[in-house]
Image (cartoon, rainbow, N blue to C red; front, side):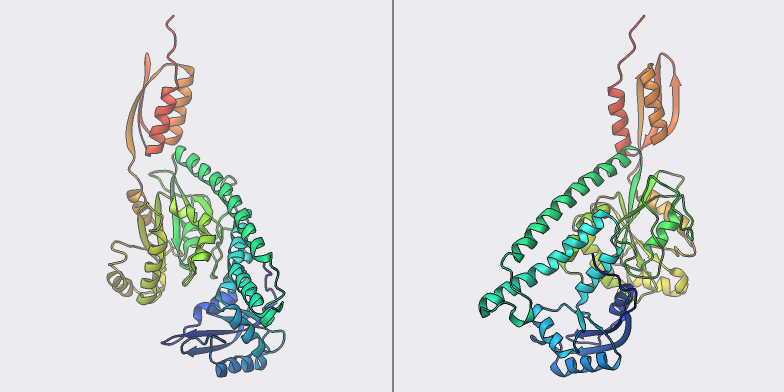
Length: 438
């Protein structure tokens, strides 16, 4: 697994854009999330150089900053090819480690992976990152007829096939884990729980909102007090605090709801990386309702871009309704919140505004959750008077809202419940055998 950088290695971040002004805020945040100390920044606006990604003069500038700041790592907020990595490495001081954006993200994922599922997904992403580089190494080595061409390492003819075999093995294990988790989701539905998923970009406040909605933990509490569910998500101002999923029972009077926090989205993720974490995203895709959490303190342009990307990710496979939650209203004025709601109305036509940190409008969010979840169905069952019937009646009391029960020669029970519970109750009723007449 990827090493955690606890010694705050000194790092220079680099970003190139085709046009406009390069913004290094996010890559600097990512570097700090991985444990690096950012001591320098170099940017450039120009078309990509095939050999160095940045221009030759700018590459020399990077080398100078690395030397001046006594840095040991250079992080590019771009994707670097094997050829570019090799050439840049020759420009930097000996021993300088070179990472691109996606290698850094994988490093962060590796540090956060605590469960077997998360570790497998990180391993899968790392293999998918390595595969094209192994293919390039093989191609270049064959062309040059020299092992280790361009400093890319010794050419191992079997490495490419090894990677593909490992990818297949991990996919099989993840499929098995997902089958188990899907069975668990269906059991929760049959027990009367509605499943709500929190989605959105990192640092939008999803974990804080989960703690605010949870029935069994305070916002500032760290103790896990619900042993049959997953541990509570941390609420920290850092990227990728949540890699796996965290599920809590929501504090709602109207119905039983489980809320799941998932891995945060991040901009410019390649398809192969998103695909590697498909198993985690299934918690979103298979929910009854998705809360898309957005940081309202960001600019309208930033929010708009993130909403577009989020919608593309969610609508690919998601069938549940999506409610946009504009969080962190405590950080901006009411006037600014209103202005942004109007500017974003096309992408978020009916958002709800909250402050998860302060608890502002969270009760209104609970009402909205109740309104957006599938309607309860009314049911009336006539059951024979047997001992087994009493068990069915008890199960219905546990999983539905019972309006009345009449006991006579037969038991007549009227209740409201989510469709899955109604269907399950009918199945249980059909299994009952009438008592024999004396």
